[in-house]
Length: 60
Image (cartoon, one colour):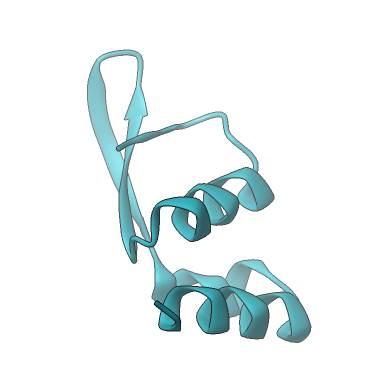
C-alpha cells in the first residue's frame, strides 16, 4: 500500500484508516519520496479529526 505525493492529507489518512496501517510510503512516479505516519496526524489535522484517526486505527 502506497500513497501519491500529490494526495491530500484527508485522502492519506483515509487510506490509513481503511487499511488499518500506521505508516504509508509516499511515491512520486516510481520513486519513494517520504513516509506518512500516524504521528503526523496532530500536525496535519485539527484535534477532533486527529482523534478520530487514532481511534479508528486503534480498534479491531
